Length: 327
Image (tube, rainbow, N blue to C red):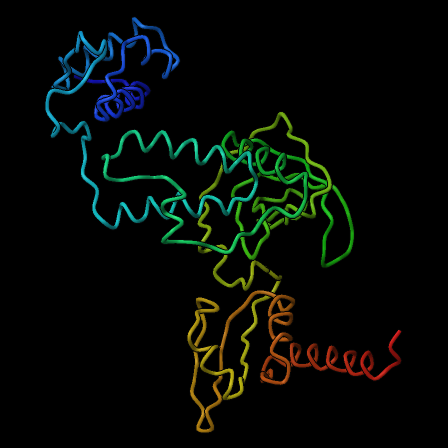
């Protein structure tokens, strides 16, 4: 029998309640699931007659129950890896940060849980005993509305008009955007879309969007591969030019640098004195300059010369700052 998709969550909820042997009445089931008693009766008949559920009615207790314990309504099996992945999805969904979106995620997961075996729990509290993450929350109050508006625009392929403050040029202006993708990195959300003014795909930090208006225009979405688009970016920066970067890290920092994948293009070369060379192919120099600065004297830029000069200038400014009087 072909059962409509929207009915399955209700059938599984009834299945769970009957499995608990709480002997729910038809009226109790109707109130719990917020449907009519007639709908519950149809569901019970469907479970019994079409799906083979061993449902019986206990006149003494005034409710329904299963007359055997080994009945399973799940039409599929899950591997251990699939169970782990679903549990991780529940826990990591909290990374969204915004309560509206996060609660919608949990609500969707709860509905999915109705389709899973009883031994698999999607309860976030239970999974958090085994898995955790460093929480990163939204950094501005208006991001909630922006996030949801962009999600709708991406789904409906609607052109949006934004007022955007550019960090690199320190200017603010209006942009018409075909929104393609939302991406979170290092605690910030980014919109990736086709900019009408620049005639190319661009990234926009949601925190720097001053205003947002959804237009009546729609667009035809072209083929877009997020992994290919971000291939040369480091920490979500996409500059106008791609650079071949070579860095020399001290022996004390070498083990830490080698144990992580910083970029898909990276190559490391061991030096005789315990130092290493790290080679990267990155788009733009601002992000990698900020990353290099955190290692201080433990790293030296070998190439490109432009990046080396930028670091040298920053070091000169630091010396001037710390050699001057303390205000």
